[in-house]
Image (cartoon, rainbow, N blue to C red; front, side):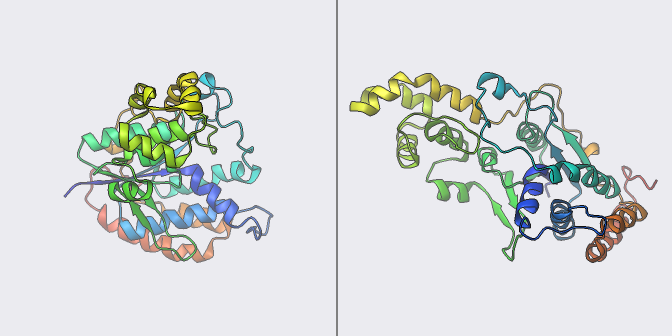
Length: 310
C-alpha cells in the first residue's frame, strides 16, 4: 500500500475561515479574533481523525512578496487586497498548534510562493511512491493533478469533503489533461492573480483552442488559422501569452528542496501543550476531538523509531 502525504496550503484555509465568519467573527474573552484559527484547527483535527495520515506538513508563503513572478511582471497579484491584520495575528497561534501536534511546517523560499514549494515537494514525494493530497482552495493546484497527486477539499458548511483527481478536472474544464490548466489560464487570463492572458480570448475560445492545438505554444504557431481582429490581436500579443504561461506555471523543481520523509512524519502530539494553547484560545469544544486523535497517535507511534516522546 502506498504511503499518503498531506500538504496543507496554510493561507487559503486561513482566508476561508476569516471570510466565512466575517459577519459574525469569533472572539476570545480577551478580544482576539479566532475565526481563522478555529477554522484551520477544525480542518486539521478533522483530517487527522478522518484520514489518519502518517505524513503531513503545512506550507506558508515567504514573508517577502517580491517573487520571481512579481519581478518579471509587476502587476502580478497587484489587485489583491492587503492581508487582513487578524490573519497575520493568527499565524503564531497556528504554529504553536502545529508544534503541539508535532506536525512540521515550512515557509516558501525567497523568490517563490507557497504553491511552488508544495508543487516541488509533491513531485519529489510522488517519485518516491507516495500518494499526495494537497489541501487547498486554490484552483492553480489543478495543474499538478496526476494519478498520485490529488486535491483534498475539507468539509465546509455542511458540504462533504471532495477529492479532485484527473477525471474531475477533465470534466469540469473540458480539457484533455490537468496540466492544460496552465494553457487555459495563459490564454484567457486569471483575474484573481492578475495574469493578463491573450486579448479577446475568453474561456469558451480558450477551451476550443486547447482541444484543437493542445497547448498555447502550438496555438501561437498556428495563428494563420485565425482571421480578422482576433488574428491581428493575437499575433501582436504573442509575448503576452508566453509571459502568462510563465506566471501561471507552478514551479516543481525549486533548487535545494528535497523530500525527506522523516521531516514529514507526524510524531506523537504533546497533550499538555495542546490543552494549554486550546485553553488560551478558548477552544473547549475542539479538545475532545483533539484528545481522540492524541490517543490514536500515541498507540500508532508506540514502536516507531521516528517518534519523539519529549
